[in-house]
Length: 489
Image (cartoon, rainbow, N blue to C red):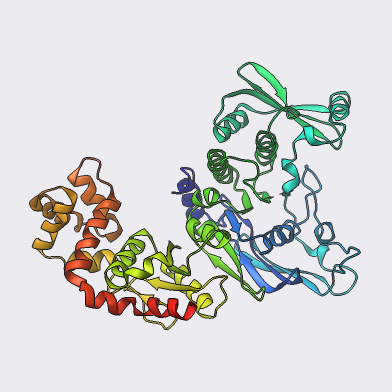
């Protein structure tokens, strides 16, 4: 479920978007040609906060670094101007040339394309970049101060030569909410090139020389983001580094809050399902790399799907991707009735809305995923050789609900421990709701107790597969999956 602050950001984005109160400066996409295996693929940013996921080597950091070089900094303020050479220099092992970085940039109602090129020895086009405060936080931010050689000397230099910046009350509150601890104060001591964070917890003051890596990095990160000017671009590599799951969720909650309040555009990279779960589907991007190192960029993927492709500790032979958890359970029950032996050899994963499944299906049918895969869409989608459809012609809830008779609903009641009349009455009232996705939840609410919507759907799907679809139809529907497993063997 997305973070509690996501709905407010979505509302602001849907209302103002590129207007004056919204995000009149917005980096819409980055296209990379000729660099680190990128061959002209583009990554689009469709929401003010976007997380890019993918395996190591997929190219997440390349996209983040290219994005950081999209603008030049204003002449005032603490933002830096990043140049492509800062991130993609020549080294004794590789020469960078033949590279084209193409940016699609929104400026109010206008969309412009900016190109930065390095055909041979020099980058061209950098002076034409638009002006915007940009901040890039790479993975080095998580190195605890007490792992640095001579950190005691560093502390003395900061104190004797630096300045003190106390965090505002709201910034301290953000730190407390993120890490789940109550901090009374926080400040950052700065010299010209170094900084030290200092916090007060339960009356005890301590610096980041005695903080954990997560506490240290969060203090610096929140201080930087909260101090960034309105409408800045903020880029954070491996945002979850050194943070436990609760802190990861808390951090995303705060980043969404700041993106709303300050109209920030924030681009993250992550390997964490906890980060992805906190974001709405539109904010999730997955870079998939096939066996030939070709890339496909997928949008709106589920956290479960991303984790599935990033996790090597897997033994199933076939991945089956579908739209949501309702489809996952229905497919599992159909296979249990029609091809029981397949259940030990497959993994079912919900990946997001139909357009995401269909986009993934074209990649899977071309054999461009790391593992064998099939995609299944709801029955209300058009037919295609790239994917399977669930039985019927309607969305799963509609297909199942309308097919069940009163006797079937009485059988559902038995499975739920409720009377047939009670379930029938709740069903009729639920189906008066236009949104069919809400029907299971409404039945659970009307029946009362501790019944979960998922449990309602499981009982309904069980009865439908057994008494309406039947074994013969289940076997027929399962045949492509059985064949795919046979081919894999």
